[in-house]
Length: 184
Image (tube, rainbow, N blue to C red; front, side, top):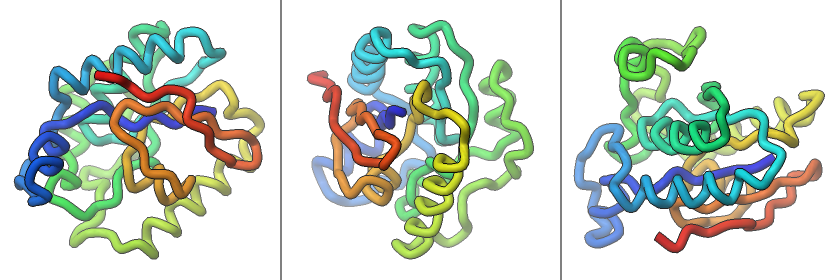
């Protein structure tokens, strides 16, 4: 299985310079972020990926679109791999609008507001990461899947902090190895 941190977002640009939340709700990718996603897609093209699963945040969906387009695959949604809701950028887009913006993706029974009200602490993130681990260990196969996710979720799951556009391989024991880091 692979974890891919979404490409650079508008939030990432501002926050990396100032360390101040710029107040951008559910930001999209920058040109650099799209290039990072394309580079990750090229790396994944040589792998046996048969599924692309993304967080419902715009930056993850835009990254997944680029990857899935390159691989000729559809996109599935998994809210467990979303970002820790801590900054304004982690206020999501309502599901009805996501369905309108991405009519080719099934959002299934995703609630209209799928992100937690009032933020999410580290304990809640840990519980979500545990739920994801349990879901993976009970799945018959997930070796052929790339999950497009976020900094805090990847940190919570693997203990690693990685830059935008990074691809990690996870083995069945959930040990993570960086296999691609975007140079964009």
